[in-house]
Amino acid sequence: MEIFYAIRDKKLFPAQTGVYLIGFKNSDNDKFYIGSSSKNNSKYKSGNGFYNRWINHISDLRKQKHDSNKLQFAYNKYGEENLFFTVLEPCAPEQCIE
Image 1 (cartoon, helix red, strand yellow):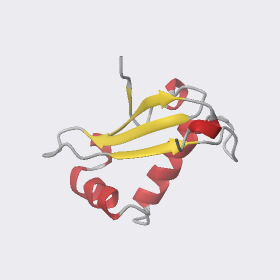
Image 2: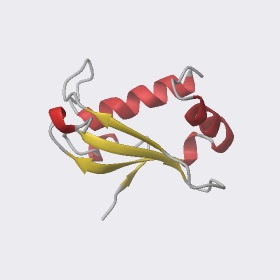
Image 3: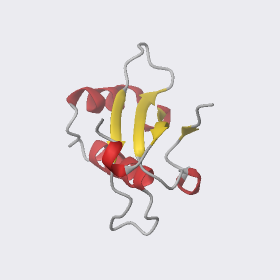
């Protein structure tokens, strides 16, 4: 069962690392961004790998500085309120790139 997280769902993110998907509700296509969270520690108090990556993406998108031009374009087109994040596969940090 897939669980979709919104920006406000900070306390619901699973506390682990793995592969995730970012997409947009109400978009006119089936395109999405896939990434991995291979570190479970950071400057954020949560110490949550998935949540930390989510916050990094949101921060870059809000500043119009995301590394993925396609994700930035979709964010600008569909808006933050339609953005969602879901965990595809939890795994150990060393397996995230595989």
